[in-house]
Length: 243
Image (cartoon, rainbow, N blue to C red; front, side):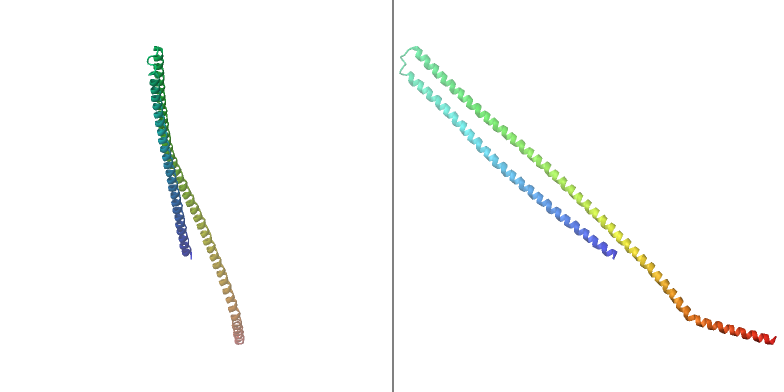
């Protein structure tokens, strides 16, 4: 009976361990699948944002190129207009020639200034785009490090959970073993009590048997005793007569 109970308990333990192992594997697979899905979503989002940033940078370059072309056209038209206005007045005073030259110089200076400002603006935009790209790379690197730390933390949490489950299983198994030991002790006590009761019953039975034998043998013994007494009395009388 004890062996059969032990075998049953062993099978139960194996079944429980198997079920816990399956549950753990399913949980880890679900967790891994969710992490992969999150990674894919983040990669898609990052790719979409990168595509949007490239498109925006392209539009900014086109806009800056368009502004530069407009500035050059304005400078050319200003020069042409100045030359045209100076032609009819070629025979004018020297003051008029001087004024025209100064106007042309001013227009050229403004054109150069606009070109420098446009180039500076383009450089600033490109520098800003480069800084944004560096920041985004740093963020992606930080995000990877954060994901790695989170994954490590989750692994530690799962390991702690497994250890806790194993401790609980061991505690339950020890409790079951104590229960089985108590049950075995109870059975031993009951068996000893039964044996004592059986011994007392056998003793009482022997006592009753002796009483029955005594009752049966008492008349016979009494008869024998009476006969012996009669024989003794007869022998005594014979002896007295002879004397």
